Image (tube, rainbow, N blue to C red):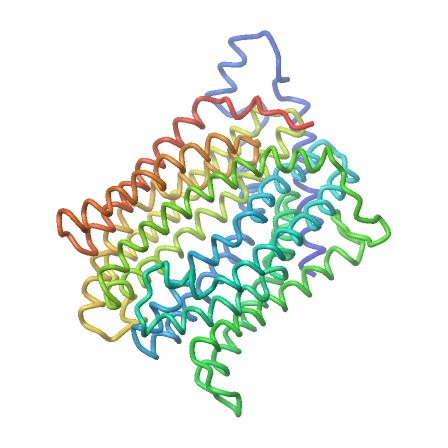
Length: 490
């Protein structure tokens, strides 16, 4: 049923865009007054209701999927938190090495999403499916290499992150289990990225939500050893996550193997490299990879600075980051909509529609970000109390959430407009912005605030807020320049 509704929604969107295209200003026109009108107002024949409808059609399944995924992560940490602050810290220290191992194939997924969206907009399903095939093969190779390296060096990576003796063993076993299933996760994320490129977000929502349910059930069984299952504690949490990833992959594979969807995969097509598609994937993906590498390097320095404050301080920090990530999901969900609609509009050679879609997506995201900010500001103690009963952690965590609340509008805008830039293939600009803010500003400010000014954990979060606000401003400036409208994909 979810797939039928998704196909129907895609057809309605394509029909609407085709109908509206008859009335819109054609790109490249010499009419300066008309071009100025399009840049500042809605294109002729389009109402805000139409645009909001298209944005919501793609965004709401992603919003449900990503929010439930993060809620599952929060439940994971709450269940692990019952074991003590050491367990929260052990799991938290494994997060950055795991993200580091995912950079290569996830960066290539950015290129795959942008290309699939362009070919969908241009009415070229054969090319879209060729991109899917190339992206899957590339992701598998990259994930096998990264997974093997991550498994071998797990203990050294956790130690490098600043683990103390009581957290080193737990963090190592958690990371090793994750590395074993990294190829499965990589293939699933590539399928999801391609589906989002054509606007099929309901299908991805369906299988990812079911995978999250599987994850929570096995958390209950394996962390504490219920119903005859062994009590594995931190290792059980990692195994539960891996089981959920395998379940998601099986369901995602069924979608593209059945052959009744816009995107479909057949083993008969072979696995010979298609150099033009790979070149396009790399042209878009490599800047994104550099962006992610800069981000991870900056975050690792930042995390090591926080870890130097001790187990309890880092546990509080990890709780704050875990709660803040819920607001990331909101921004990322609308960013999915911006990426897909901007990519498809530019594929139809409609930069005016691309701009209108991204502006309206940003407004919807702003509304939700304000609601989240209010919740974080006024109910911080109650939310942090779900993770820990330590009074010190609760009080400090609530103060952190007030800072998180104040950044919500800017953070939402940053995610959505960056998604629009990526949908256009303008990944070099976002890479430079990330390097400047996450690689330079956040860690430098954090080391100054923690090590020199002695502000403790609060100082680390002042650095994070500075990073978010600066990055949001730079992304907005790049978007307003309009240069993203001129990026070409062959």
